[in-house]
Length: 354
Ligand code: COA
Image (cartoon, rainbow, N blue to C red; front, side, top):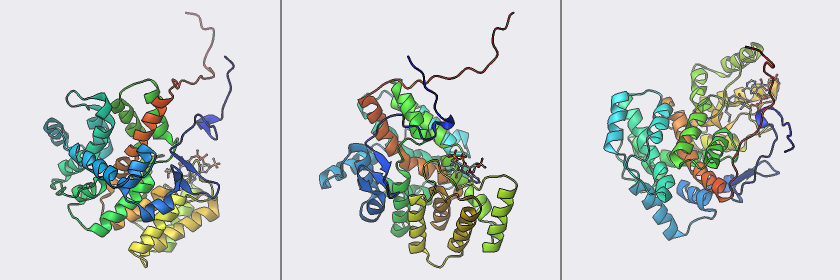
């Protein structure tokens, strides 16, 4: 076997093929051949989820069955609800990871495990949040995954806000070999079960350099009263060698197309907001000083705040969308599997004698 060395962090290394998602030459994010900018404006979250998982957009019956399947399997086992109530864990991602790791809660048919796990994600998130806030889980009578999710976590059925969240979730749904998806594919390549692979991916998504970034942005953003204060903060972060969360990306070095789409959504929702002006001032300053683009998480956090969604839920919302990408990647990995097991260069001590 000839071994090759690749750059640290696998920067710029193509490790396998995928037919699910890519970025085209113009910098558009593309799902199964369709530009996300078109999908966000013309299709629902569930239509796009079906597309990601099955490869084509659904017809009316296929969409109906898909929605019914996600709603039908969404109920959470009462023993799991008891554990959630007992733990009252503030970290919603930790709770989601733990409750998915317990799945199946009773014997399950392996062929149904993927959709069943995914259907339970909104309920686990909503119950976890309710257990720490003491608020009730909102009614969940909407007929769709994203609509029910919005109702359960916010307790209201404002259809306009629900639609904005589902558009944001389309953009969070899939992003080829990002860290959590790659981890899921490594796990799948060992032929482990879907719940174990999803648990690995959830643990990875939670990290602040990945999905966890969106939960940290409001920590600084909310304190700014105007653009000047925001720019001062950026300067002091960069001068002291610290990162500005919500900036930079492994793939997008000029512009993150998802961030720009979310900015458009913010403009539609609230065109004259102070938050939008401050966000654009931060974006311009980080670009001027470091040539780093705002990423999806930067604008997503501010949009979610404007939609009245509590900060504790941001990374979990990312997860509730990305699980459809993971479903597709789990199946794609197994459709042409080879164990993912790289080599390493040993740099430790040698020839030690006891
Ligand atoms: N703020 C300030 N500087 C940053 C930065 C940020 N958010 N992101 C990257 N940089 C700097 C790095 O320190 C590095 O500087 P150097 O060349 O002087 O050492 C340079 O920009 C290149 O960054 P690098 O870490 O090599 O990029 P990467 O591709 O390995 O990392 C991220 C990508 C996403 C991990 C990185 O940009 C980051 O940590 N961003 C903040 C967290 C975040 O928003 N994550 C969500 C991603 S969608």
